[in-house]
Image (cartoon, rainbow, N blue to C red):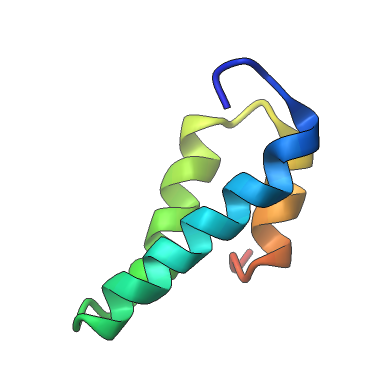
Length: 60
């Protein structure tokens, strides 16, 4: 993400979503969406990345 490589936004979003699902399976309720929202906030100016996050289940 730091090098602004748009070709990898989908891959990054997939890894973030998978991590959130693992956190939820370990008992943290709403961890996936919370984690996706944290990355949306951290990279607030990258709309293409936001689209990929929504593809992987980010609500909003």
